[in-house]
View 1 (cartoon, rainbow, N blue to C red):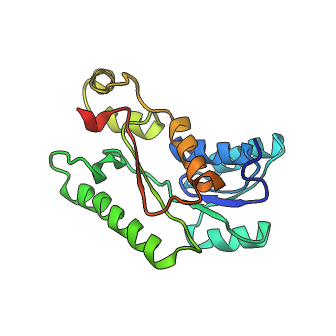
View 2 (cartoon, rainbow, N blue to C red):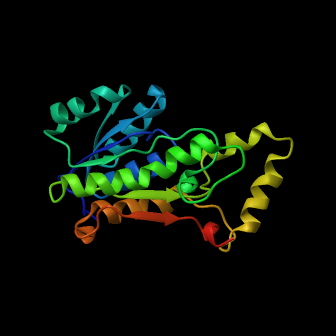
Length: 202
């Protein structure tokens, strides 16, 4: 506990799912948190919950104001987590293609060299890494299967396919993110971390 004490983290997409898991874990580790998302009511609730546990947090809905909010409220920014999501495939598409998703797969795949380029151009002042999760049990995943007639069986088919026989949890991703932003990962940059329950093995 306290690995991030005194640090300030902006976490986008943190009113739900993986982003929320990351924000709450970081807050528990002592970080000041700028919570960001499209749901102001839920964002305010999350901030109140963090404050009740002794954390320091603020909510901002407008992305272009996040850095200013962090500087004004906490005096600076140490950590930036970009965790926005959309309905569809998880970020594992950077490494595994899916039928009829060329643009999405290409855009995710492009993040790998982008991260490496940023690591090269801005090190040692900035470290940057990419997390590629597969199917994580979030509201976004549950909503994405509602378009099908058999959403629960689709979820079960996904679970059955994975070597570890379960969906990922937001905490699985949050713990990896905590490692990457901590001093324990001080020699890690430009890397792609796959967290997929073994999905790429199938």
